[in-house]
Image (tube, rainbow, N blue to C red; front, top):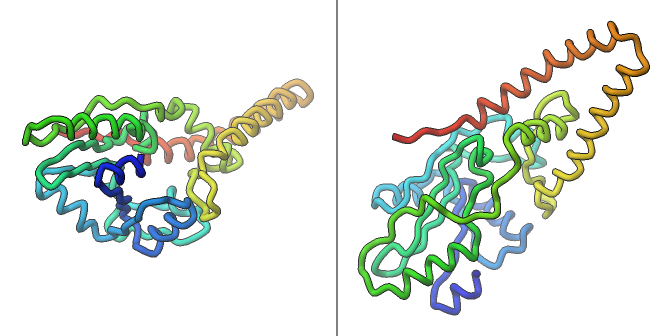
Length: 234
């Protein structure tokens, strides 16, 4: 899509609430063909908001998301949720903003596909109207993410079932979501171990151990549910 936009006379930028150093690192690690711009003080996001173009939600940084990264994450004013804004010199051609819910994994899923966005932009370019395009609230996406309960289980598996561990980028050029199949296998092994324990060990021992584990697991599961709380906008 990037090359198609450039062929049409446009340009693509990735804006992030990280500092420029980390934005540049992401651009290099992911071998992106467009420039990533750091906006840690959210000046660009605020400008879009003040001009009525896009009103991105902002979440406070928390240790659950940042504690397992291989490098320091810095969001001095929190991090804003995903959004897409396409502009011409005259008007808004396309806009979409994520409203984080548990269903879209706090905004990590449920984003419009590149082909869908480009199709909408092309449609707007072919329209002679001078009216700004309304916010897209019914986007087509193949990025639905797993059911939230399964997502919680995968986070627990990623933390070896002792605490949830976020699928954060480790600066190795690998999409963190590629760890999910491995975690699925880990869940299977975990369940098999409990089944084996119930089959071979004295039932009171296993039940006591399971009760103790559930007390620990509930703390982690509660953390996930509060971190990815549904956002309601009036």
